[in-house]
Image (cartoon, rainbow, N blue to C red; front, side, top):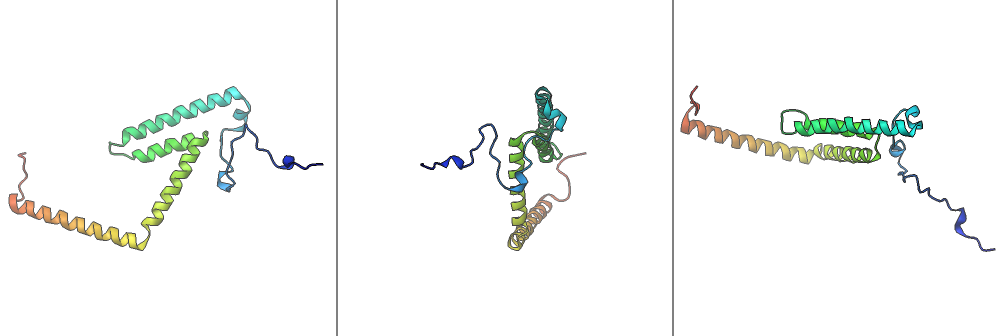
Length: 145
């Protein structure tokens, strides 16, 4: 008898593939179990989470040009979405990884030395420009109060 590969595991079509890493094992809805049991209730829950997350993200977008923590508010809205939607969880996971990598690069002694040198050069240039301005126009303000 000819042996075929029927003993190989078959992927289920209705379940998305999840990576094997332990941090991905909890991806999916974080709604309470009693909400997940009812399809209508779970759909209502998802619509509510989406609307709340959208309001927070829009508030963050409004705060971007204004003095305020715009990006922080946008990521808070993404975190609200991530409680229910896998796509938001993937985006937040990617963002956390990139922020961690950037922090590690920023802590590199060579990068810190370079940034300190560039900051010192920028401060010297600003000081020279301020000195030239004060030499040309004095300490008098260009407007009358």
